[in-house]
Amino acid sequence: MRIEEALDRKTEFFLRPRYAETDQMGVVYYANYLVWFECARTEWLRDVGMTYAGMEAQGVFLPARRSEITYHASALYDREIVVEATVRALTPVRVEFVYRVVDRAENKLLAEGVTVHAFTDADGKLTRRGFEALGIEK
Amino acid sequence: MRIEEALDRKTEFFLRPRYAETDQMGVVYYANYLVWFECARTEWLRDVGMTYAGMEAQGVFLPARRSEITYHASALYDREIVVEATVRALTPVRVEFVYRVVDRAENKLLAEGVTVHAFTDADGKLTRRGFEALGIEK
Amino acid sequence: MRIEEALDRKTEFFLRPRYAETDQMGVVYYANYLVWFECARTEWLRDVGMTYAGMEAQGVFLPARRSEITYHASALYDREIVVEATVRALTPVRVEFVYRVVDRAENKLLAEGVTVHAFTDADGKLTRRGFEALGIEK
Amino acid sequence: MRIEEALDRKTEFFLRPRYAETDQMGVVYYANYLVWFECARTEWLRDVGMTYAGMEAQGVFLPARRSEITYHASALYDREIVVEATVRALTPVRVEFVYRVVDRAENKLLAEGVTVHAFTDADGKLTRRGFEALGIEK
Picture (tube, rainbow over the protein chains, first blue to last red):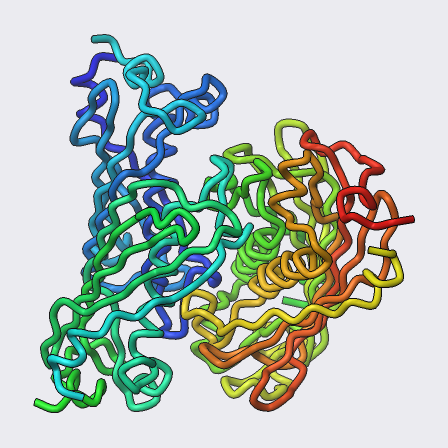
């Protein structure tokens, strides 16, 4: 895949919040959005033809260096959610994902976020194998 | 408590990462730092003489509006960690916490973060009862 | 729905284990099976025409009184899983679910479990409204 | 340590339920007791002079084969809890832990549980190195 194509791709991940993900405020606990971002990221990789499991099997990992979430409204138990993931920056050593969390029935934006990841080897050392790991043609 | 005193206060929360908190990369999963921030925030409130449970009993809640984490190094299973929490901004409607996550044995900074919270009522509507809820004298 | 029909119903819930659900042993952490059981239970309720969210809105809750899991083999990150849920006992005050967790590609049984729940009101007191809450005709 | 001594040992693990651990029923979510059992088990190992991290470094693991929980009453956010762990059976290939979860202020039993673990190597194959891993003299 060419890099422009990867940067154009928007992946949608559908889920229903689990009871486990709610807290006693009656809404989804604020850390769980990072878990959903991970699910959407995994699907983005599958969409571009790779799997994160496959990348790890090749010795390439994607630890987070940075995360940001802006919470607009609460996600509720069992209501259909879509998490949209796109890539806003991609280099041989680094990838930055952007996410939107939307309540499907109301088409309402619940949260937005960013995660920044380094490409590393199994020991956590930076590697320049990012494009190769994602099958990106330079 | 006077507001200057609240802003000066640094609370330390000690923990050992749980096995449940690790992932197959062999380190603490990136979302769990937000859980630890919550623990440190709870202790900060106790330090200034309130409890979050008590605030909720009075009908005042602190939902997150924003979170940010910068990951410097991995936290490891069962190694002693301290999470330091301070407040960098406090108004009747809003409070901003800053956190540092440190490996105690190596005195090594693992992560830093920020969470921004609104004071709301049980229905999620903004309330100006923040100072009252925290026992802050104007 | 007649009670025989409810007892005959087998619901399948499909999922891929999340990275968040793995631990440093490289497999799904042992507590997460209870979360998956909850997901399958929620789908079973939807299958019989109710939703757990709807039951709670009517003031009927299903807290767990007992859980059991037998772990046969490890669930792995991102591999397709099906969780099958059936009801093995149902009375106006109590419902018992049985679960099987299966790796789909290998058709391999990974775990089995049971959860026992009481029908209660919002204060946790037993209620005999179980059949009504599930729309079961006596 | 002699095996009788290990079987006599009762370890107490103290905690306050985290907001993250509650659900919208306003109590601790039912899967989190297995996480607390893990914490208490880790402390039991430390009490007998080992650490689970150290065991893993030696290539000995303790995957769960079975878990059981009986829920008597709900654990609540931020209230002091003690989880007591004892070992009820110990062989070179297997260890069985028993747990009690108690609200400290009310001295009230909230839950009881059992977990059964095999001693395995890193590949999940049974090993007879259990006594050695725990420093038990035969």
